[in-house]
Length: 255
Image (cartoon, rainbow, N blue to C red; front, top):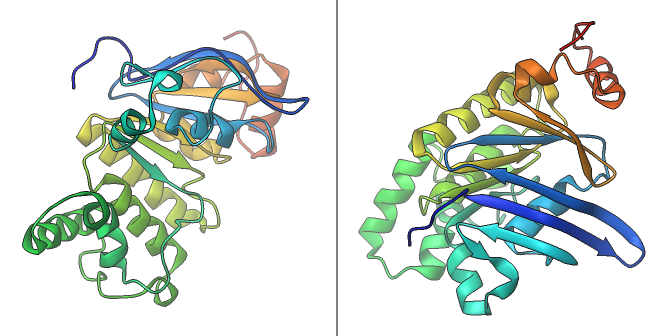
């Protein structure tokens, strides 16, 4: 399926839960091949934005377009078809504890595709190798580190070669060394595959290293959207405070 325009687009999107406005009239686009990072304090709508993109939530108003499709206009079959073109890495990894890493990675193929077992095995092996887990496929989630769980979940997210990749706090709960490993993996795989990637994170230091653009979200609205070198010199008080809170050097003066 081909389409013209950005891979992802929000057109004046608002999401409310009762009287609480979590996403407030947002408009933005993410190009195919772009690595777009959303940062900001907890409870500001970051994860809700990912769920709106994935179709797990429906906007209260406005239009969410993914790969040229208005999600609200799709029936369940059409929405499922679009979602198959997306990969989602959940914050916890969301692996099934009674399945091996390889079996977890294979789930999208065994549940939705009619492939021969040999082809499934080959694709799982390739995905595990891509995330550095070539020799760990027969181990169970409880037997491996948090970083290995995240990498296995990453392999599952890319197993069907998605055109859109969504990451919810990919470095959450990891030590600084493993966090940098995951950062490099996100950047490497997103760029190698040419997917539109949206990363929600608190880890601004990592985002400054690999993002094409960073959006600072507070109370449901982007206060600034800019490339890393521009955002690191931001004059927006909330952005500067966020930088300083992570012990990052904040240049003073005009952008």
